[in-house]
Length: 339
Ligand code: OXD
Picture 1 (tube, rainbow, N blue to C red):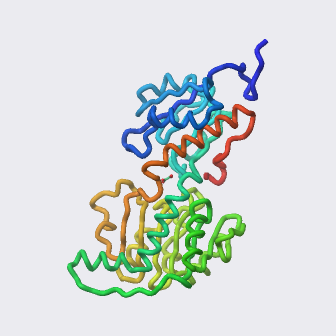
Picture 2 (cartoon, rainbow, N blue to C red):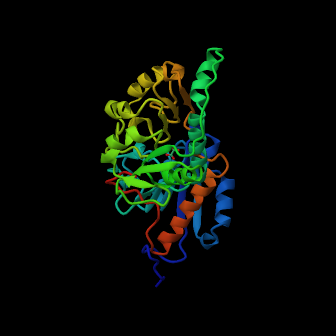
């Protein structure tokens, strides 16, 4: 009799990973043959054990998922997956935010959903620090004056000693906090558990936001979008930021009441750097395009153009190795907290 593996299949069997690409996501997220081959070289334990199929926009999806043990993608057809993909043990979502696949009622039994948290860290922190320095140097105001051909000097003072509030100190918020400490900022943070972080001077829980918002010179949104966090910064909370506060939203637009924010930007009370919008792409009719004191980047803050997909492939392949060794995968999404 053939020896069985931890997952109950015969040893020597070839496992199947299906990677589903979406053309509209572009190069950065492309799971190409070359990227897969390079990643497999970094995971020699899988040599000869893994068959990898590459699909795009459903071209081979139906057939591939019939035998797939693992799947990796961002947009994929979730209809009737329990029946269509009976072997799936892990689906890896090519991003940190998984709000677009919630609720998880479509997940086949025994299958774990994993995400790319931790992959963005270094690039995300660079962007966030750039945004902080832009806000401190009053770039949003200067760009507003530039658009109006107006010579107006906006003097700024050093950032050292100012206060940053990081809402959602996870991997990304934590990396930004590490940098902020290097610049001599006081860092306040919130996280669901209230658990301390070495670069956060004082950690709070989300319920403490009303008392924290008026204390900050800069507010940085790093929270995942879930049913629990929609409009975490609503009109009331936006109103609590004191005049002169610089605001960054790096996570998802649904976390913030953008209309309330826009009104304060128009009045010149706040400045902001926003990377996320609803919908995306943001239509030309959105008033945000012409809002003063605002710098917008089109959701490209964190996905490293060279390293993002290779690093994510490393997470996927390491998790396949773990599952084959009878261990739980890392980066599992908690269905209750939705991240
Ligand atoms: C993500 C993102 O979810 O880049 O990873 O928005």
